[in-house]
Length: 127
Image (cartoon, rainbow, N blue to C red):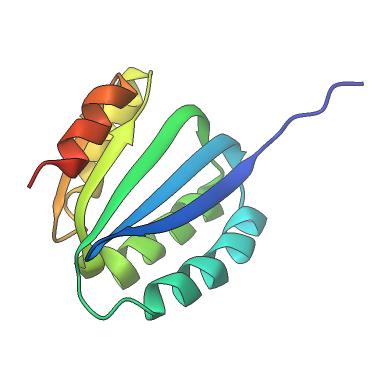
């Protein structure tokens, strides 16, 4: 029997006055994944008083979204897009770079795609 992992994991830390959010997406995301992660993300971001969140999205194990999950992701971006200063998307597939460009339309901060994590982290920490 084969087990297929999918979902999102989230981490939040504060370094001085900057909030760092890390997300790791695994497998093909479902609507149910967003039903779990959205309230956690909403609660975490509600405590942030200023829009200076820097985010690392690890998409190296992301296979895509179910249609309804893609809509959930879009809604999440619209709801919280103004709260992000920088979003680094670390991936390994050509379509992920395209998704990063589309995502930048819905986020007020900068969005950039990287194929190595060291460059992504350096960019996030650079003022």
